[in-house]
Structures are given as C-alpha cells and as structure tokens.
Length: 175
Image (spheres, rainbow, N blue to C red):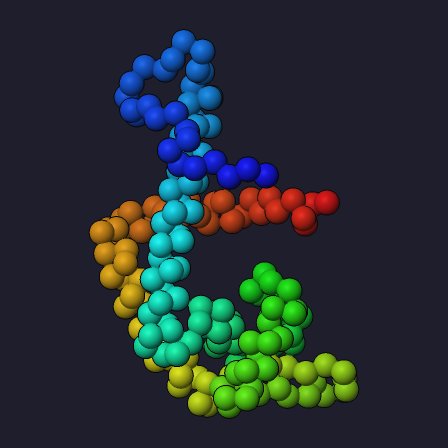
C-alpha cells in the first residue's frame, strides 16, 4: 500500500470555502487524513527521542522498556503468550528480549505450578529498581517533549484516543 506524505494531501485552510466538487464529508475525510499523518509524524519524533535517551542514559531500548513496563503491572508475572498479547507483538519478538533481561538478572522465569511446559516471566527486585529509574526518566522526558500541551488538551487527546481504541477495528481480528 503506498504511503501518502503529508504534503501530498491538498492543503486547504480550515475556514476557506470548499472547492465546488468537495463535499463537507470529503473535507472531513481529508482533514482526518492530515490529522492521522501528523499523529504518525509526532509519534515517530517522540519515539525517536525516547529511543535515543533510553540508549544514552540507560543503555537500553524502547522494546526492553515496554517489556519491563508490562511486567511491572503484573506482580505475579505473565506467561510469554500473555506478555506478547499485552504488547501486541509475536512471541518471537518478546523471547529474545526476555532472554537478555534474564541474563542481566532483571527478569526471572518461574515454573507454573501444575504445568511443566508453562512458565511465568516476572521482574526481579533488580529489575523493578531498574525499571523504576527508567520509568521516572521516561515520564520526565514525555513531559518535556509534550510540554506545550496543556492539561485540558492532554485530557481531550486522551479522551479521543480512548474512543478510537474502544472501536477496536483491527482487520486481523475481524477476519
């Protein structure tokens, strides 16, 4: 599927009259496309900054941070399949990250009682402490990167994104 660059979409000023062939529905559709492209661009910039800061300050990566963040929410740990589900990635994507976190003593695998094939993955004390430091820095970085967004605007964006998430129109899940 071709990617449409933001500047490939016809630019119109919000208050300008619609071209004769453009309906209000068309205008809304184009504006939503512009919004989507700006959301992507903004997200990519924030993620790039986070990746750089995690690497420089903690020698870590955003996927590692995401795995640790997911595990931090579940004191009893998660099965690998559940962890993959929480992160919305494949088991294969998570396995390598978890293996390295285990090697570093940040995560431990624990046998599930009554199921010899299954294990839970959970943060160790060292992992919780490391994640707490990273999470604090992460929150500070997000606050800096999005510092121009007011409290009311942040709430409005959160409400809008929640509404989008609730529609859950993932085509792979409906196929």
